[in-house]
Amino acid sequence: MSGRLAGRRIAITGAAAGIGKATAKAFLAAGATLALLDRNVAGLSDLEGCAIGFDAGNPDSVRAAVETAATELGGLDGLVNAAGVFEVAPIGETTLDMWTRMISVNLTGPFLLCQAAIPYLKAARNATIVNLGSASALSPFPGLAAYGASKGGVATFTKVLAAELAPDIRVNLVCPGMTRTRMVSDWHPDEDELAKTAKRTYPLQRIAEPEEIAAAVLFLSSAESSFITGTTLVADGGRTFH
Ligand SMILES: NC(=O)c1ccc[n+]([C@@H]2O[C@H](COP(=O)([O-])OP(=O)(O)OC[C@H]3O[C@@H](n4cnc5c(N)ncnc54)[C@H](O)[C@@H]3O)[C@@H](O)[C@H]2O)c1
Figure 1: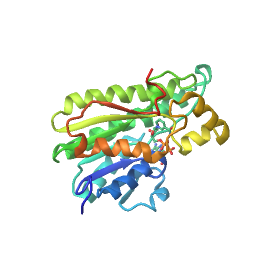
Figure 2: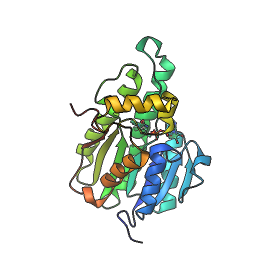
Figure 3: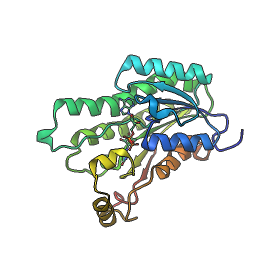
Figure 4: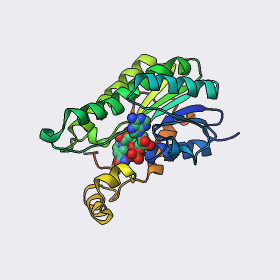
């Protein structure tokens, strides 16, 4: 097997849709062997790999999923945390349920996944973790208090892990701007309006395709980024660079 990820055994959460699915496809094309983790198991059926149903917000479910992934793949060289949920509301209408859901899946989820995967990653060589943050945690966006807080937490969590796990495991963050997935189409159902907004607010004048974010995740999971840890790769069409 040849390719940028040849021989690498990698678990990807959120692989049933959007950025996680695009990442799984890119990783397969690069020669990786995958464990595909998602609460939507049916959405994993078009991907080659070990499909595992799990709930990122449930500690027992996360531990069991990581154990199954490592057993099925014979170890783990990498982890990508792409599972996530997104809800928008002004602070006064942000219910405790919404807050808890986003913190649980987007922040506690990566914590539990990393904690469960670290013993396997430490046993591997040149292991990597890539977490998905968000440009919305870098540049405050009204209505995203809970989501932005969860992603801001992931950003700090990623840096702490990078410091703690060096030199054994490299840990990095990818912060996408708006990307063409269900998460965004649910938020902006009118495609023409979305295109106009993107043209006005993004220097590159459009939103991202999931494959463009997957390319950033692949870079940070491959030997091409061998001297990079604790970094944030912002893939947001220039939206937050000022
Ligand atoms: N799409 C964007 O514009 C955008 C921008 C910035 C960051 N992100 C982040 O990128 C990641 C991927 O987002 P996306 O746009 O591909 O979203 P998506 O909604 O298309 O896919 C998310 C996936 O996560 C899975 N998932 C959700 N909750 C889960 C849970 N509790 N347990 C297990 N699986 C669960 C879903 O089933 C789905 O397959 C997320 O962390 C998101 O916050 C997305």
